[in-house]
Length: 291
Image (cartoon, rainbow, N blue to C red; front, side):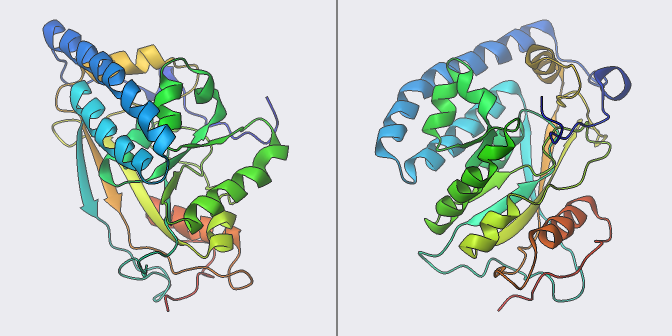
């Protein structure tokens, strides 16, 4: 593992707790069987979408993600966030013309479910870790959705990944990335790494911050879906299917203005996007006003 790979301080022992209300065994089994059925049903569609290319993959990802989350008993709530950072730093709506660049979606990272949650809320391609490309079955679904892979342990591949994201944005595809570079339990978060924001600058694409928060049926923070430390996918999946009334809030904030090379740095974009998601004050205010 390389030294630049970020590591969160979260551990399953210290940060993760079981659901406040548990589902019965029959419901847990039915959720698992339903999730397996959705995965198997999605395979032939993923192969077709991979051959067709274009927007077909993002449509597949949205439909499949909604079905998979529903099978697991996870409800997605999308809400509009409002923020004023430095007065004119954000625009009220995406200043996007038909045929223009896509939007770089950047969110905090809590769970392996996060890319599915964002895809269920809005059509997009995911920036996914390269390890997923080696997972049987899941690989076909992710590739079919048009995902762009990043090798987090090989710094030398990062410029090529940034170019791939910029090309996708120029082609009109929205791309979701998780710039923390690792998962947190949801009680806190880490800084946004700036590299992927260079793709938005190169493609002159807008950046839209998104905040993800899992909660139980009573509105309290739910840490069960998190995927941290030495946690395993099966353990996290078991906590998800065991929870009653699990909800994930997707707070969609106004877009940052279209960045241009020389007008704003990727570090400033990362800082203000992170501040928007976390509700903290940004350390910089160098994002240009929307035209």
